[in-house]
Length: 282
Image 1 (tube, helix red, strand yellow):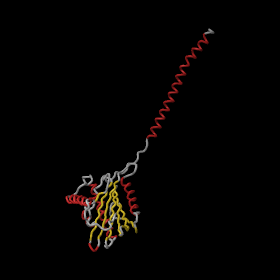
Image 2 (cartoon, rainbow, N blue to C red; image 1 turned 180 degrees about the vertical axis):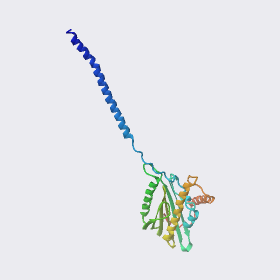
Image 3 (cartoon, helix red, strand yellow; image 1 turned 60 degrees about the vertical axis):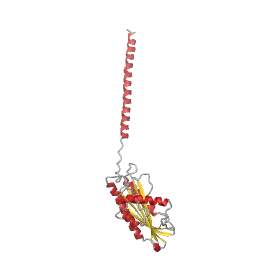
């Protein structure tokens, strides 16, 4: 009997060991799962970010041909004897985003001298971008930059700027004088915005060989008229069924284009068209 008591104690001690191990194991697993669950919960909470507000869609998704944005009659009135009635397009890698066109002509009035005129129009369109803002916001920023750039034109004298009412969503008229080729030029630039498109139109002129310098009022009137037509063309083009850039026009426009191409070839071949002694540059 004395020997059996120690033996019974040893058996009970060995039997208690697995129970303790199981208890420890359960406690350990429970802690691990708790940490995992807590981690998953916090991760899910961190990844849930508020969605950014969607920017306003751009109003215009394309641009018209700048060379057809101003009426033929207006060009004849503002640029008499235009060398190329159909205009000279500016270089652009994407006409749906940026485009320009210019006209220039010398009206020889014999003993009364000659009148020189230059006009150019440029379009810039801005798309809406989630990180940069809406097309209208981006165009508004560019509009302000173009006004400032015009006012800071090199050599400009007597610079003045004022709002141009009735042209697009907002417009500014900048006027100044500039002396070049020994003549006094009068400048008027209209910078306007409609939706997400910025239109910049410049009109200037000078008298040659004794002819009078054009009045600032006439130059301003011409610039505003042309700018109104250009803005209207942008808005009309956006609402037309064909939203691709205008590449043609009426039969008269096509004839003018062919004639301009022939004139350009003649100039390249050394044409004998009359030129002023000092050719003005814009």
